[in-house]
Image (tube, rainbow, N blue to C red; front, side):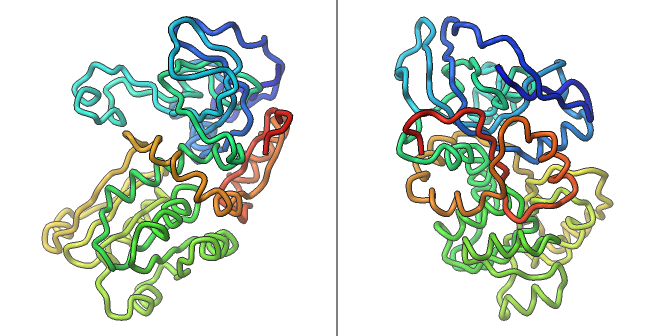
Length: 342
């Protein structure tokens, strides 16, 4: 069967590999119907930051249909539509026991510590899948994991009712955060991105207002309201530094982007203006909640898709996305199309 495997930084290959084995105890075999390319996939490809095995089938955002059940699997049936949880955790460290598995001491991710979803079929532990609505397009279901990450981030930023929220970066997480806020928050949402087409797409789908990353533009859009909630989905130190200048005293800057470089920060700025700097990593228990939102959000999720490609198109898609040539949020891979699927 065909798969996209990462060997080392900059070394991604589309190749034929052996068919998936029969699932073992507690495992399921999944026919992958759609997968999404994540910013962390690109970061891993560019830097090799999280390569722990080589080669490894890439991809941790995917949906599929169960093709076979291993011994001891309950709660699932062959033919069920499912989405994958990206996290591989130890389950026994203090963080896992405390419900903070996203900061597990031995945290790894599907597609890195085990084979992921850029493939026709994959075997995973049943503990890493969530049943999904079969009537929802697989391309939308493939965005359940990043939607859960965005949901975790907006919970962390905890915007006060009616107050503005500024999101820097209209990639998948920033754009999906804007989508969730359009549903769950009663205040204005401002978005900024250097890619005007992508920012415009997010604004069109979510009702957010596009602004420039400048004090004049942001202040003009606030109509005198304080900016207490800011989410950075760029990971760029320069952007983060500017956001620290823009957030109002008593506000929160939440960081979700994975970037490069270090941030020169005078902690006195945080102290004197009582700014909360909050990290947001992956997700905790939000995946089932995100899946439950899929039927209501399906049309808008599909409207945010940039391109739909086959497995053969993944290397070119990586190149295009790394160059910033995209007008939507998410490139979706269709490894297989099942008869009768959306």
